[in-house]
Length: 363
Image (cartoon, rainbow, N blue to C red; front, top):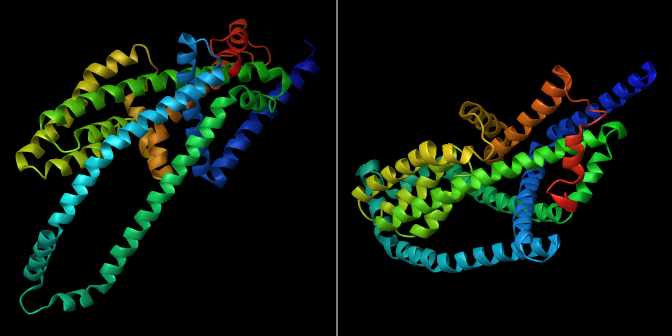
């Protein structure tokens, strides 16, 4: 290859890399939340694509019809689950309202013991007005944060659905931003990212499913109210390693506290046993087939993303680390350090994976 042409290839490759880094850095600079929403939407698209591919394998219909069927089945499942759960929640709320006068009397008695016999409730309220205002402000902020989280979740679902319906369109549009001689290698890298995220999701969802089933069975055995709903929530929160199980145990302990202290102890032991089974039985079996992360690296990523990205960053820390590790491996180690993969001439295997991968014409 002439030296001038080689220099041109190197220049275009560097420009493409600089463009990708600049776009990613701009997103992070403007708003980390926007970047996390886009990544979460891509994760939802991978999930929906996997469901559509599974249905398409067994049904004589096209990809988009399979995707529409998959979304419909998921919607029906959640609607039926909410129809089952709503009466349970309504019953618990009615019980709470019935017990509310007694709780008020208990709070009043506690305040009288705390304040002393010479201070009335009104005087105590006047003395602690600033503290009460702070509590009210924080409560209002919590409600606002909850509604913001719900709106963000809906935006992620909608955006992920659009991405799932036309993945080839968005992928080819991104690849066109790259220099022509490196587009095939970039497309190959995107396919590998899709493959790793897909198998990471398989492993994570499998673990979530078993955790939800085991927790639900245990809560039913202990006669904890709303066992199915809490078990389902435990499975969902298990998506977040380390922190999710702790958050999932809180509503279970609160519900168990309506029974007796012994039930609370058994519920804590139940969650501990489920985590031991997941860590020493389920995870090793799943990691044989799915993409896994080193525990120390996963924990560091969760702490880092939780610091800068909040709850959404904590939830997405693990899949983000999967993507980052793959990029470091394929681009930095192989293409730069070891120089085993030339970005301007992808391997035959990479070309096949891009043109005739099992993903088909839609990715």
